[in-house]
Length: 256
Image (cartoon, rainbow, N blue to C red; front, side):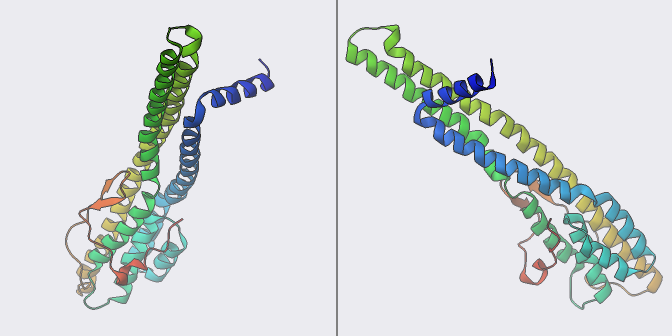
């Protein structure tokens, strides 16, 4: 079949699906836009995460804090934001500043940015099949209404309603399956980024402890332990991390 015939068949199927095809089309366009944007965002966020962890750690341990902070500030991504937030406070030695809390707050902000859009994908993957099934019910109602009006059962009377039912169901499933796959893929990528953010937090706290041993001056506010970030896919919520405060929210300026 040539391209014209394929195009005609697709348009014919869309038309035969009835009015329920329009919300399904809208769902597919929303999901496609989010998939493209989220895929690019996560690619940029993790593109240089391993390199920046190694380079910033090397510079910081060599005592070149200014260069390490400059490198972190010029690198996009949540890992660089974590390093920048912690190293800047190490350099400034601000009295009363809890470095671990500042890093955790930056992590909350960055994680919220990474999870942005996942709720849309989760909603589409759940709503699209339901819209398809709703179209199925509407088609069957139409088919039985035609039978009741004619007073007898004929294939030609119910064919249109059954066709609408099958088309809308298939369209909803066709949309939901790839969207659900994309959602799970993005959640996996975000989990890997969270592990990199944990490494960045550990590097900053280890640097503080090394400075305490060498210089004998404790970095103010440093606490033992590495903050854990526990993502909740598709909700944007983060467990175990406090609400961002105004004083530290400005450190998260590395969003891609």
